[in-house]
Length: 54
Image (cartoon, rainbow, N blue to C red; front, side):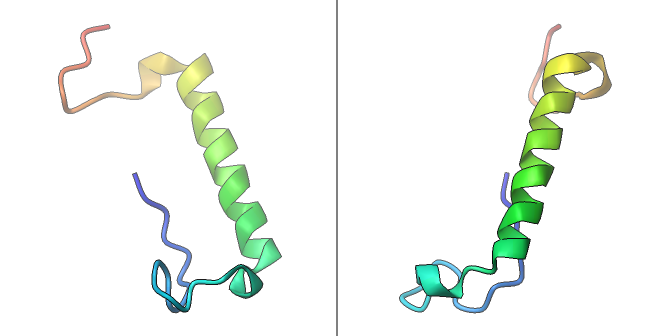
């Protein structure tokens, strides 16, 4: 899974810590935490195309 944040120079030599936008980083962190929480507490709502046999 990848999350694109529209950052110029992503994963290039121009990708340096000083270019990180704190608000974007916070939004991405919240998205990841919410997704993990959903997967952990409501596993029946998520399916896997690779053969999840729950």
